[in-house]
Amino acid sequence: QVQLEESGGGWVQAGGSLDIRCLVSGDQLCISDLNWYRQAPGKEREQVARFTRAGLTQLANSVKGRFTIAGDMAALYLRMSELKPQDTAVYYCNADYGTNYGAHNCPGPKFSWGQGTQVTVSS
Image (cartoon, rainbow, N blue to C red):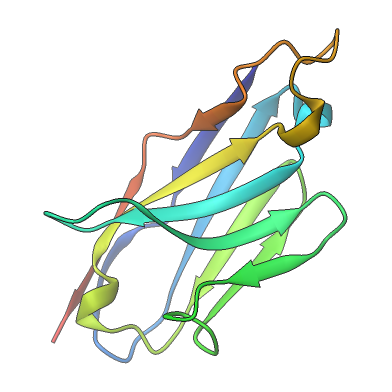
């Protein structure tokens, strides 16, 4: 099992920057991907960024060129620059076991979530 703890959210004016962090504990060896998701009021949760065990990264089109994801399976960071009011959301860290799920030493759950950290961007 994996435990995730986000930190670093807060309030910032449009155009500003903010870094958020996710600390990972537990069965880190079972994790295939670490992801950042966000959920704005009244909207569905959406994936913002992905970081694989091999170090590959992917960013949603809406944040490309502004956000950077980095880290390892113990800590994941999201550097957010040129923030816009539409970036306002609760940001969640997610761990995905991928194909490791179900292995004898990775019983799951397949997906784990942190409690989220609020990011507010004012215009």
